[in-house]
Image 1 (tube, one colour):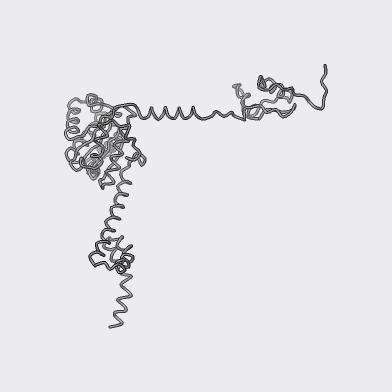
Image 2: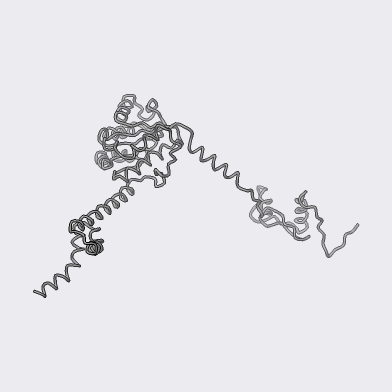
Length: 333
């Protein structure tokens, strides 16, 4: 009996991690020994011990799930809520943002529509919402309208549109970026309408557009289809009006101002340095002069030393007044 006990004690430490991994409890397998020592030292009850391991497993599962969701979302990594300049947002949008980040509209299968002229931060705003949704466990997909339409059109040509729509249906929210920039033909318009109709009252869509609803006939061409698409998108939706100055223009202006503040530096390669009467200009300066001719090449035009010396003297101007003299010769009057 003692022999059987010895065998059981020797086998148990090896089999327990294997059993835990077979049960898909990797965090149990990693932490159970450390937690057991802590539980024994602090006098935990069995339930306390087990609950602590379960909490570790759930926390690790949540972390791994969020990592997977971020990887499959195609969200721009830099367009997060922390990088969003809230003071640049319109007041109404700023008030709506916290509720949208909580994800209640996704549970209700509502849409979010962000309208505004180019450069107003529409894409950054919906991407920031998308990142917050992922952190709360929602499956999100970011796609430009052009690429999504081409994806659906390719599936339709292969008679697999229904299967492709089912694949997209796993995402609780899909961000359709820049819908106003596409001018579809009949087939493209039909697959886009089918996509919006399929998600109506079932899944959420976040759309950015520089075109107001009255201009959506440029997208769907047919007035009846346009009206039907708008009706499905607007019925359960939150509309964000992104008015105000262009954020891109402000960034460009700031870059220009920063460049103006930088001190100007002379290019030393294009200056003549006078060391003595036989000095010459740098080779780069000679090549620049030679290239002024359409027949010039990388090899400098041959010049005598005297010609180079005279050219350098002509460039001195008012900046250098000293006379160059050869110490080995005398001046002839």
